[in-house]
Image (cartoon, rainbow over the protein chains, first blue to last red):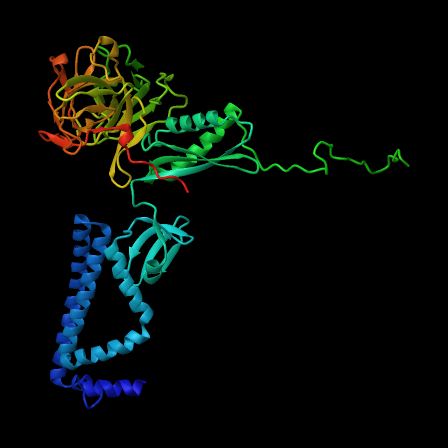
Length: 301
Length: 268
């Protein structure tokens, strides 16, 4: 495979007839040394300049638009600058660009086969940025992982989870799978499942739940809270109480409401049941038969 | 110990107050109680109350939770200013009413005051802002776009008798005009109080009047803030400027029908 590739590159003129190292031999002549110095100067001035320009682009675009767009702009400057510096250095060193570009096409095909996954990730990355499903600092959920977006890079997206783990998700996976953006909108509904004993008055339970929501300043008055009678459960009447909150205070408000519901139910004597199990004795009305075993003699004996 | 119910002129503790020695200045504004102490180059502030119960708490709180600020020069006292809430208010009249085409109605809204604390002579960021009454949050808009506001039930009174005056309330006159050809149900009103100035009248705090001209559901409303004391308190003096200077007039969505609010998706 490598022999065929070298032959192809030589045929394309990317590699001189004298071999791939032929231009390097010329560097040891006085002209070659001058070219080496020029190439070095290009690299030494170009690379810091590229980094400075990248930082400036990231800040300027980030201030005017968004942190994510700033990051993309910064990276675009780095990539473009690196390519320009590389081309300039190669030119200074005596490599002809025309055959190199021709060879790049052939190399591209070869590398394309070898790096299908990486290319797919790069293209997926562009789709993710164009679609703007999420941006840097959004809170997203992918499968079982929930975390804040640290960066959207060429090959992957980096997340920081709540317990401070660093997660890398390949861009291709994100394009293929379901992703939930938890902070896209400014308000969210906190759903709280509530179960009460069968003996309780449903109207009274609803009234207490709405009162709890009204008393919490972080629970939005509008959209109004929702109360749904979900089902007659095995041991309880099951409800869903949905309260709208600001996305940024979602977890705090949901915790507070759960605590307050428990406190108010205790105060009002409303029972939150645990699972009950009734043993069937074999007949509907007969009591469960009990036989005491031990030292006491059985009267029937 | 200095108490707001004693030495403060009139009903209010608003203005500059010199604090001598380590005795705290205590100001009570409705349900809110604020204690301020000067210790060397530091200002110490403690507060209590402001809960929706509106029951004045005992003060000083035991033990007081103090917040501290170190100043550039030794402060000699504190400036206490009444300001309006930091977000718009969604007003819900207890008894919604309809405004017929061409009709005009002036209502008086009692807005709970926010207490702003500053070091005299040092403008810029205030030390602290404390609501005299903590209001619930609410949302104005649809599920994807809108703005966060406070929720306030109002009586939508058509007159301003002395009994509605209170040290912890700012009376805001709102004049509604229905210029549309349709009936206007006044069920919820958005009051952009960040554009309003606070004035000190002889018996109450006032804001400048808000003129709302409703031009139809599709067109929106035109809002104008007069920027001067309302006619009901023509002699009132300015106490606190608006948080955001208003444009000459604003076009905004100001009214909403309760039934017109977007539905909430059913749980599946």
